[in-house]
Image (cartoon, rainbow, N blue to C red; front, top):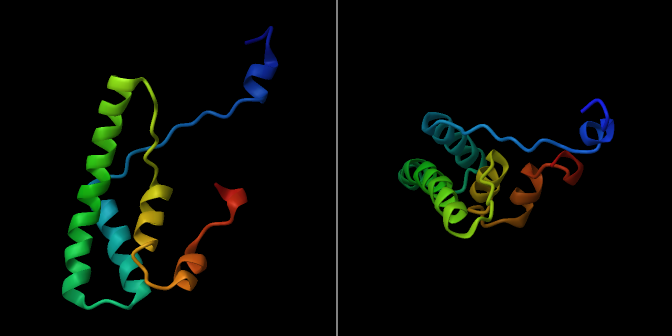
Length: 103
């Protein structure tokens, strides 16, 4: 690295920590309650299913890499985006979206 300092300065390390199921459930519950358009029983059902979906996609991304040698990144941002797309209103989606420069 001493001979090639631009290797360190010009590259970004892409590393994402996995969220535990309890954190996924908590974020889902908070996000869906903030949207406020669904009844409580539907919110509870979605709070249980969304983390399972996210975790299964993480598992399948490993299989995808093993079979095709292509990376598919499953990030906390993709999970939150998925939650926001449950909203029927595009305005709700825009309200919670991060600026593109923060991605």
